[in-house]
Image 1 (cartoon, rainbow, N blue to C red):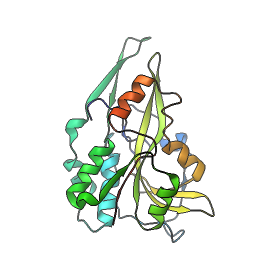
Image 2: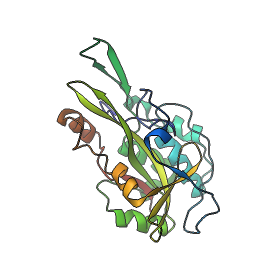
Image 3: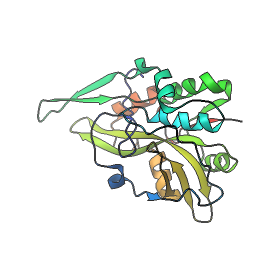
Image 4: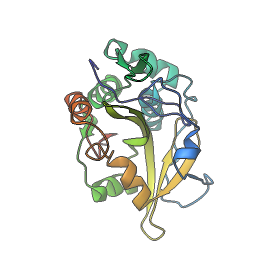
Length: 231
């Protein structure tokens, strides 16, 4: 993804960077839910747990593709993803004079393209998606892979580099105001509507410098982005 700074992290990590951070449960208030919960929750097949620092996108894609009947797993979809786009970025810490390496994860267009190998033009990518549209998709049986922010790394004089992560949204409960999703550790979680939307909006206009925000946008990283199969 040329120079993108979106980061991949394993479930406790986010999906776009090799920078280490605390376990995700320390950054996101997640509630583990039973898979036998509300009937509105889509149960995705388990295609493998993410085991690296960049492939949350392919991991979530594999689950959705298997849901639609394709004989794929995490390793297969990850190997099919164009890794030439994952170029390391380096920033010099002005206080320690040390270089900090940030690896880019799967940009939205790349995720769409790798899924199209199996689902063709039915794979859709939508930035700036309305919350109601997302809810309607998952409640109609269409799991949607959403890009969310799960933290950040602050570099003096440069700004915050957001930790971004792909998750598979599998349900919505308007009564309880809960969004349900499958993370790349193969576990199902819930977030309140408010907390999910905060993460999904990415907050690029809040604590991220204009330069970093422009790099992210040039690589297709925009608030409220989803990738899904339209069938």
